[in-house]
Amino acid sequence: MNEIKIKIYGILSLTRKQFVAGYSLFFAFFVIAIVYFFFFPPESSPVNASFIRKLFSDYVVLTFLFFLIWLVVEGIFYWDKFIKAQYKLIEEQKNVIETREQHLILHKEEIETQRDEIISQRDEIEAQRDTVMSQMETISHQKKELTQSIQYAYRIQCALLPPDNYIKKCLPNSFILYIPKDVVSGDFYFVEQISGYTIVAAVDCTGHGVPGAMMSVIGYNLLNQAVKINRITKPSEILSFLDVGVTEILRQAHNESGVKDGMDLSLVCIDNQMRTVEYAGAYNSIYYVHNNVLSEVKADKFPIGVNEDEVADVYTNNGLPVSKNDMVYLFSDGYADQFGGPKGKKFKYKQLEDTLVSVSNELVDKQKELIKKKFLDWKGQEEQVDDILIIGIRV
Image 1 (cartoon, rainbow, N blue to C red):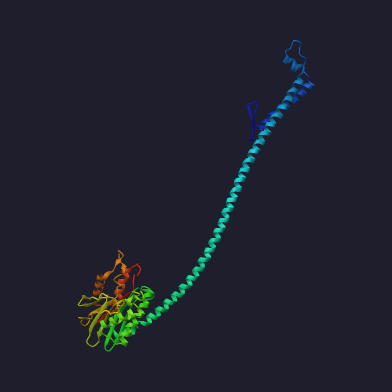
Image 2 (cartoon, helix red, strand yellow):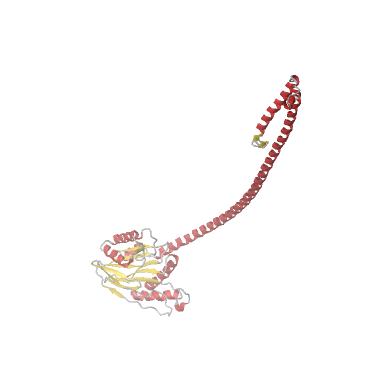
């Protein structure tokens, strides 16, 4: 209320306190004057005195009483104006409060709507979380079962491969560098001794991981059948036997199964008495090093399997002109195809040839160590792209 101001006679702008103070002052003045002049009236004015003097001499009490009544009337009038101004201010404040209240109600409704949406979203998130947790448990269980299955497949594949002591017995001066890309591998090696001959093969089946491992089982069984049961020692004939076997097992004749898988390999037969070496290959060449000079014998350009006409391919049988202490290397394409180095490029066969020449005079165990280190240094942080298989034999 103290902030309310009204104009007195359109001149003075006073607050309520200022008005009350002034009003009280004038009221007290008139009351005192009336009391004073009532008890001490002034002398009567002469006959010829002016009207104003007669008024304040003969009728002074009535005059001040008149002014007092006028002051009361004016006080009531202006106090009414204060009340109206106060009422107007109250109405304005009431309107402001009502407007704010409406805004608050709307804001409250918005907050409640948002709260409901948040609760709904929270419930949905919790439901999704429960679903994800359930799926994670399912996936974890499936992964565990799959890992156990792959680990068991790895044990089976390891059981198929010739043991180290048997390899050392057949090839006392040799090494096998075998680094699968996954737990199980599409590459495998075969070593068997029969009738004075040692048969060695480095085989690269289509794919890697589980599909490659399944092909490796087929390939290993066919090699066993060719060498141990049918007693075939000529490399080209062994490859033809494998070619027919894979085509029949996978029903590839006339594209019956639609399976185009097969295998590439290099295979040698070492005559243990004559120290001669024969070789046949399907896509995979062979290297031999004599006096620090590397020579390559190229493979035939058709794979094992995928004979839709049911006619076995005829592979070339090559005699290797090797001497005592020469090195013979069989390999798959994984080493040369590995990405790495400072520019992330393939290792390639030229670097592989240079690497083999550089280590060829070392002991076979040292060769394996150096070749593996070269591969790991080249690969660096890159992902291994394929299975790695290199077999080195000192003649």
